[in-house]
Structures are given as C-alpha cells and as structure tokens.
Amino acid sequence: MILSLSLACLLAPASPAASSLQSPPSGHRAPDETGEVASVLDRVAVVGASASAGFQLGREVGGHTNLADVLDAMIQTGGSQAVDAASSSLFMDPRRVGAGCVERALEAKPTLVLALDFLFWFTYGRIDSEAERLALLDEGLVLLDRFPCPILLTEIPDMSASVGKMLSRRSVPSEETMKAANARIRSWAKKRKRAILVPMSSFLDRVRRGEEVRLGEYVLPEGSTRRVLQPDELHPTLQGLASLAVLAFHTLREESPHLIPEESVLWDPVEISALVFASREPERKAAEERRLERERRRAEREKADAR
Image (cartoon, rainbow, N blue to C red):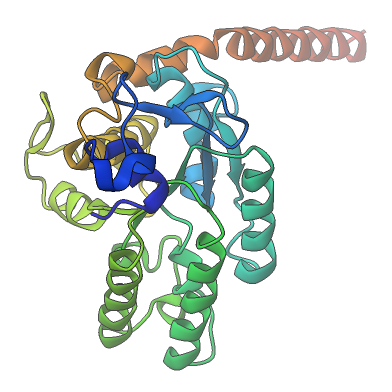
C-alpha cells in the first residue's frame, strides 16, 4: 500500500525543509491545479472492466447500476458524482478500450481513481502466449501511470472457479504467469507512492471458502459466497460490489486516516446496497408499467382473435 507524491502532499508533516509539502489545516484537503481546495473524494473516477461496469446488476436492482453508482451512495461529502469510465467491452480489446477508459477518466481531472478490475483483461483472455500476457500487463500499467492522483488497484485475482461458467480454460493465465504478473504489479506500485494495492484477491479467496470476513466494523458472515459473487463466479453482486468499494476505502484510510474522515463515507455494504436499490425505484416502476401494458395489449389481441 503505497501513496503517491500528490497524495504525500496531503499527508506530509510540517517541516521547514519541506514547506511545499505541508498538510493544510483541514488535514485532508489540499489545493488542486486550479488553486482551489480539493478533497480526495471530490472527483472520484472508475476505470475497469465488467465488474466495475455492473455486469448483470440491472437484473438484480431493476436498473443500470455500476461501481460509480455505489460510490455515489457511499460518499457523503456532497461532491460531484463519481465518473463512470469502466467498460464491459474491455475484454474484447484491452489496449484500445482500456486507453479509452483512461482518457474519459482523465477528462474529469480525478482526485482519486478506482481501478479494481482494470488490469484483469491485461492478463486474462485469449492471448497467444504467457509471455504476451505479461507484455500486455505492462501496457496496462503504462495506462494507469497517466493518472497523477491516488490510484486504488489490485493484484490479478485467481478466478479459475469461473472456468466453464464465464471463462474458458484457455483464457486463464498459468500459475507461474499469475505469480509473475502480481510481482510486477507489486513492484510497479512500490515505486509509485500514489498507488495503493487493495487486497481484493485475499478477500475473494476467503469469501469463496465461506469464511467470515471483517470490513471495519461490518462483518460479512460465514457462508456469504452468494451475497458477494454471482453464480458465474466472476462478477460481484450489488452487495459484493459495495463490499469491494468499502474494502478499497478502508485500505486507503488505513494508510492515511485523515485523508478520508470516517464520517465522509458509509462503511456498511448492506446500507450502501439498500440506498442504491432504493434509487432504482423509478426504473422498476416504469418497467412494471411497461410489463402491464404488454399484458393488456396481448389480452386485447387474444380477445379480438377469439371473435
């Protein structure tokens, strides 16, 4: 877990020898490039693949939902909405689609980036050789390096449980490649103080084993695999996505407690999920009205045909 120079500017103690890096009196705010005071939560951007893009969550929630929506429910500071620059198409062309995700996020001048599944398809996928997987991963890291703000990212998780459900065997890296890829990610992050590694892999491993998992004061009880993961064993449920967001923010806060004041964020994934679900009530109501209208028209056609 490593913080960047831009983040260090928010954290460094006052020192006559480094007055330009002193923390402002508020502790978690510092001037941005416009000279205005900015919080790390002011402009949060999401770059990533289908998990961040909310794959299949529309069926669960009743309306399009993604990680940016979860963050909007989670963050209580009243700033701008989180920027959704994730794409479910990232698996098709990580270079092109990934570059587009990063460009969209950069346009928002983010103060914090969540890239929890961004690197996944830079390692997984139908790639010709294991060496090419690692070369593609390097390209993904180059894209993330364009962000000057704090970046929350993860190592590549073992999602082989999804083989035969969502993933093909051919799309999964070898064990050796996975180890090498994660070593590269750790090395990359260690050299960049703005990069914070979120322990998503260990979280998912424990969830799959059915273990109790503590996220701050919230405890995910034993046997919660289906609370967190969809049946495809690859994508999170709404509560799973909220849990990953809470895990990411806890990781950042453990590194820098004053960067995210406790009261600025909701820390209960169940509460966050409920807020997101409630916000989709208009979409669910509209969908029900459309369904009733279709049934009414079908009944009218059947009645006319019976004459």
